[in-house]
Length: 239
Image (tube, rainbow, N blue to C red; front, side, top):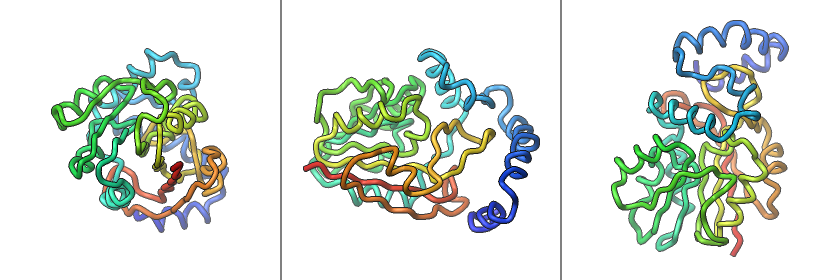
């Protein structure tokens, strides 16, 4: 089912019916696809879960999940925004997929993720080319303005404390902040662990709340990556 057809269905089907279908039918389908390892009710339990539970959930996820959220178009757009000869942090780097595409051009790259499993996979992909650490975005282990560029792609929709995570990303960034999130409406059962939703441009701009942010919306087609739909790409220059 292509993206435009899905969007047409959402406009036609009443929202209440759409949510009822999601709770009754989608929940069962997702359970049958992923099995016992997938935390079906993470949207309900995540806020009250402690740090160790968060780590466990995402470690298990990275043991089972291999398809990338970033499309070739996402990679091209982010690459075009990253200058040569800069220090860069990929916050929520996962298995190092984006970092691998940013290697070279005199860049000094670092990555951070809460999942030890993801970081292990990133080390296997990148070797010693990138400095990698485990940490939550809400508590980054870096100095103020340590990086010229900070990128966080398909991550902020997952975090426990959105405002704290954005503040930390801004704190460690010296020149350019690049944020990419999916533009989705809330549904209780989806094939992801998303906790924050930005159906409109203003939803993301208001939550980030950084002056002079530039926002671009574009569509990722089906079949290119794990995510298909509209994407919001936000850029802030501090220098």
